[in-house]
Each structure stands twice: as structure tokens, then as C-alpha cells.
Image (cartoon, rainbow, N blue to C red; front, side):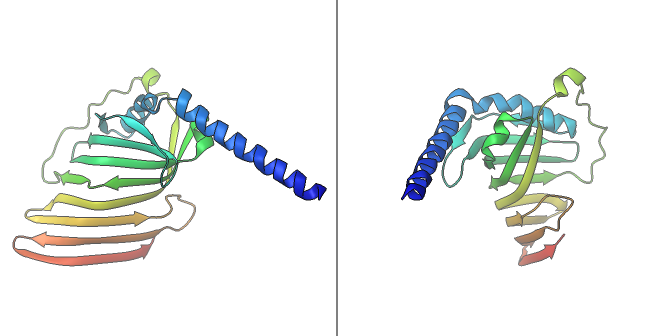
Length: 195
């Protein structure tokens, strides 16, 4: 009987501590404060990132953040999406490394400009600006994407991509499905691989 009572008390304390952590993070920490961190992380990779929409907390189906109206570009490509969602490790928000367990990209459009030779990127790298948190992404999922510019008149549409581990130490399962459109012809493609 004492064991059951102690176990129940421990469970109640754990639930209250978890609820208090989530309440603290969502009420005190503004996810829009992450915009400079994300923009600076992109600058380190020579990518121009624009986060025009608000960043909001999400609770279903996982705890995380959601961004709308995201644009990114570099010398040879442009990217835009209506919505990005990332499930966060709760305690990573409070540390120096933000861990995104899964990044989901809804309806991205990527335009490649492979035939154009452009000058190297001129994104400034002010050392004081680039000091920021490290971002670690474990899994990526893309739904209903489109890639234009791989070859003239060639388009990948209805792109579905899933990579379940982005760690260089472990093997990752990759699943890609899309429709290849070349002029008036269209064919499906499915790729499953371990990388």
C-alpha cells in the first residue's frame, strides 16, 4: 500500500513539473525571438532567409513551433513554403543547442537556376551577429513539394520526401516519391534507400 501511494505521489509530481515546464516555455518565451537565431544559422550556410510570418507554438500532434510564409535563397536556388513545422525537444529550448526532432515542410516550391553562373554570395559575416545557438535537426519530412529547373521543361511535382535520421554517425532511411514531368509526359518515381 505504501508503495502504491508513493508511486502515485511521484506520478502527480512528475505531471505537475511537466505542466509547469510547458506553461513556462509557452508563456514566458516568445517563439518569434528565435527569428534572429534562425536567420543567423542560415547566414552561416550562405543562405538568405526571410521569415515573414509569425512563429507560433504548436501542441498537436507534438510540442513544437510552426512558421508560415518562409522564403530562402542562395546563388543557384530559391525556396518558398507556406508552412514549416518543427517538433522540439522541450528542454533544448532552454539550452545552447536547439534540437528539432522532426522538421515538416508543407508544399515547398524550389526553383533551381543551375545554368546561370553567378558571383559568390555576398552575405555579410559579422562575427558578432553570427554568435547564436546551434540547431540540430534529426528528421525531415516534405509533403506535396515541387522542384523546377533541374533541366529545361523538367519538373518534379507532388514530391514526398522522408529522411528519418540526419546524423552522420547512423544510417538513414530515405523515401522519395514524386511525379517527373517533361514537356507533355509524366511518370511516377519512387526511391527507397539507406544512406
